[in-house]
Image (cartoon, rainbow, N blue to C red; front, side, top):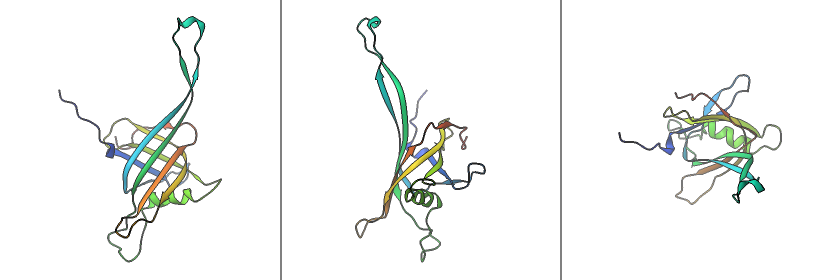
Length: 156
């Protein structure tokens, strides 16, 4: 039986533009890069009874998502730039400080694989500008605020 690789482009990202009590999951469109990272803090827990072999214990984990893409306009409205609602929610949060600067997200595989997570994140937003012939980029890092929660994949 042949095996096939999973595509990185199968990841979906939604931002909650509603409330925690009544979520409105808005897709973040225009992404061309998606990278999930989990950093672990390790502490040496070696002892004299391990016959010279060392050992480490994970004492903390942090998660983050790094995304890039292009800002796009509604093809039906060339005169006025109407931003993607998901991109705009992230940009808006990235311009705030303190209360309101973190948002709730969920991310999952659109191909139905069981990988699906939800959590609160802080936003570091970048983008704008470029050469005269360049498409306007965006990039952001979503830093997990505490534990992310496994959810049932919305695409399953």
